Image 1: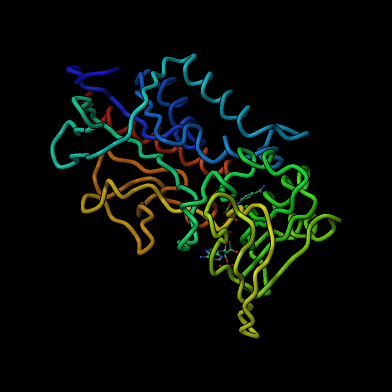
Image 2: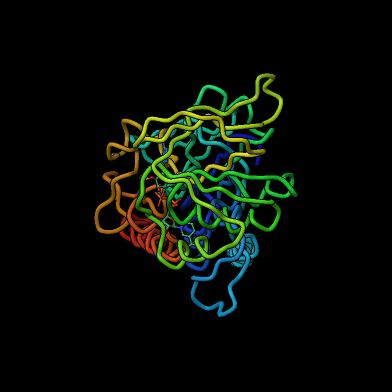
Length: 315
Ligand code: NAP
């Protein structure tokens, strides 16, 4: 779909993570022929993870990318249509809603399901972005292999950090988890697994002040600071993987939809935004649970609400 669409869509689903694809399955089965927009991170966070052990129905677990691919096919089977694009601007004041994807790529739609998810957070260190792809990464499954036989560092104290560390222990000689506090946000089961692993060690009450390499060609060390003692030292490592959470992808709706202080879309009655006909689901509006299954549940609800809205307002 390259140019301006003349016809008005019943519904557009923004995002192809677990929430977006579940919304697409339900909307497609309701015969709404959803247009599903795939942005910069197709498949969302599940496509960057490995074994998913807590999605019901898979007693032996399922690989994240496989789960996403299955959902994608399932939605396509019922008539969902996919389009690559990055939403530049949305006009939610007029009806139908106008979605501007840059150039002459504009889509008109009666309802909108926002499932744009959340993206990895960075530390904001002076050398961090210069070394992305050269030892700094936010995706263990994408980049871990490059550090085979080398020491690796993971930053964070939540489940993502534990999961990354466990995955990276397959390649690394040693994985060090650096966390800014003594207490961990990670679930007990994940933390215990990491603690018991012979290759994983922990540095707590410690923050990273910068990523080091004088020539900025590859990571050789991290400049660390112990927050209790104030000690600063250079810690040799080959890679720094971030596991410090995510930021919601909702900036394009600033001024049009309500957001909390951290930029998450505010919803009422599960998936309703303040604009009737616009629904939000998954990590872009959920800062509390942030699970694949809760994202899927809210995607389902958003599609059902979109269908109801269209019925009540005439298609
Ligand atoms: P999270 O639970 O929000 O944890 C983020 C961690 O990063 C926290 O420990 C936080 O430290 C630290 N952090 C944040 N900003 C930092 C900064 N600027 N400098 C240093 N440290 C920083 O995020 P998450 O681990 O991505 O997990 C998100 C959700 O997904 C959770 O509900 C989690 O259970 C779920 N999840 C589940 C699985 C699984 O079950 N397999 C895997 C991954 C994620 P503080 O603790 O000090 O705030």
